[in-house]
Image 1 (cartoon, helix red, strand yellow):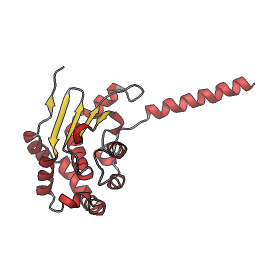
Image 2 (cartoon, one colour; image 1 turned 180 degrees about the vertical axis):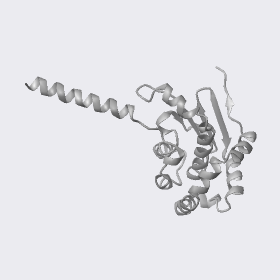
Image 3 (spheres, one colour; image 1 turned 45 degrees about the horizontal axis):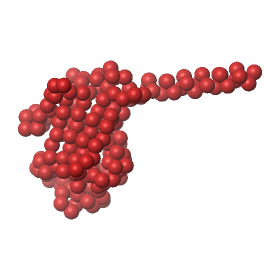
Image 4 (cartoon, helix red, strand yellow; image 1 turned 90 degrees about the vertical axis):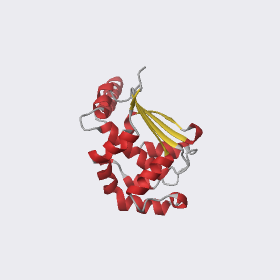
Length: 196
């Protein structure tokens, strides 16, 4: 009798675990919790756990394969890893018809520029596609687009960054979603196909 109870509990546990994995949804721009991100402002690139915390709140977080912070550069690789989502789910998310890869790379670069002020650059990779931009270039673009973008000493002021995010979250989303903005941005900073 005890064995049957134990087997039933184990089966229920396994079924629940499998259901949870199958039901995992990948974070999108629309589902990001900007309040959680704002709390992580003024993060040093050397603070691995806080940078990882930021990346885990951004679009595509569930597909994170590797985070490399060497040389004050934030390098993120997305893809499949053992025990994660299926490759099909990941490919469907990143390579949909709505330019998800471009939108996510741009959105993630915006928030990393806001939240990790001492990083020198941001690089993203998914499968054979890669995108990188220097922080200075990103700050210049964002300062032109958003006149109240926190730069200089303000970039280290958690309250100033939180206020900026609170005041501009929808404008940032609209900017990233704009086909004209992305066309102009990626003409100067293209996503590159890397042949293996």
